[in-house]
Image (cartoon, rainbow, N blue to C red; front, side, top):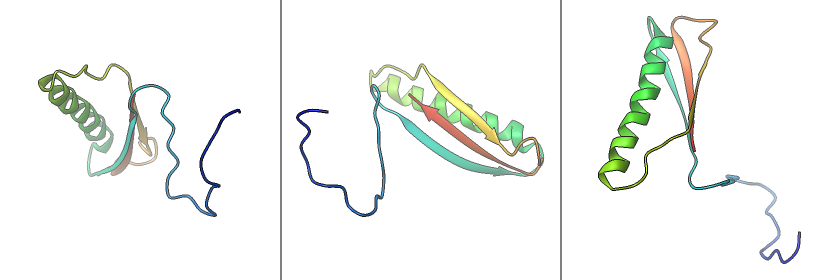
Length: 87
């Protein structure tokens, strides 16, 4: 690396952010109850749909790439964590 400027890193970090291109948003939710996996997937898709609607209203290009993961769905029908990444 050449030409880097800045201060030395602190002893601890509060956040580490890397942007490959454009924006990246990540989130995590816990969904509980019967049919948690189906509810979790529907919730993640609804979030992406709502964000796309808001972006379109502001004449901003909608989200084209996203990833939804359901964590714990294979072990429990009562609580699932959704993680999603929007690029």
